[in-house]
Length: 392
Image (cartoon, rainbow, N blue to C red; front, side):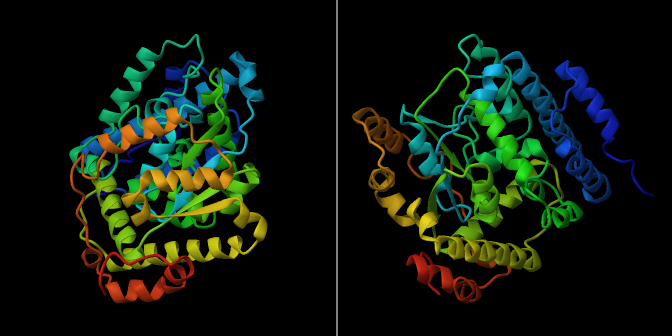
């Protein structure tokens, strides 16, 4: 006997309007992908009672956040005039040290990074002097805990603490056109739609969120990150033509294994049934990652793109994090002040690898073999001289 649908589009939108107190959705380009996601969740997902609660919290947070974001642009017209100038974007294979590098950048008082509590509670503008941050931070922290982002199985893989720097994906989720959904839930039809989707609206919305976060606290530059940018560089440059790029590189055998382990934890967080590692899914992830890297190399063949790009090796970042920051700053002509250097040194000491637990993973758990991964990514490891961390 078929179960009842988890969600109703109209009911969710009505509840969001009632919670937000507003009814202007702004751009309507979210509606079709939102409806596709709900359709896929109803037809394909199998969620535990807790997973269902967390999923509903996530969806309502996205909808309420959109309503309040667009209302704030009316209440505070200055938000629309905020200039997002020459942001730094960190990308690369998943689990290649992008979060750690961005966290280091975020300690520089001249840099602006979105924080988790701000991304979870966009309104009122978190950095506006008139905003009382305390209740907003408390609300953000509550939602982070309720949705499971600080579950033990997540904490040893990623720090979603409220005051930690947030990944761009968490802002892009508000568009409902974001690849993260296929890591949260088993929704293959939505994933198939995403494969052909236009991500322009995703980056337009990210700019609007950055404007809201910047309103009231202007700093020299934004520092942003997401491995998903690697697949979406044309859309990134379409919205941020003056972007500057940092590409992190890591042995694909390690990065793929870690990424697949991370996805298993995300699926568990949102109440999907546990399924043992599946070779077909692992192959699809491998091919998607390889195609993204091939596209990036083709784009880097353009001297104009290569000039605004710099490369960071994962092992170099582990062994000499401040040295890698210095390399990036020097490449882009950014001053590394004494205050920034001091903050970064303190962060390095206080955030040693394994502080939140040891994340264990092995590529063979997914059904892949080291040799076949080596062969598929040889073009990449040769091009960027990426050192191997695992023996063949």
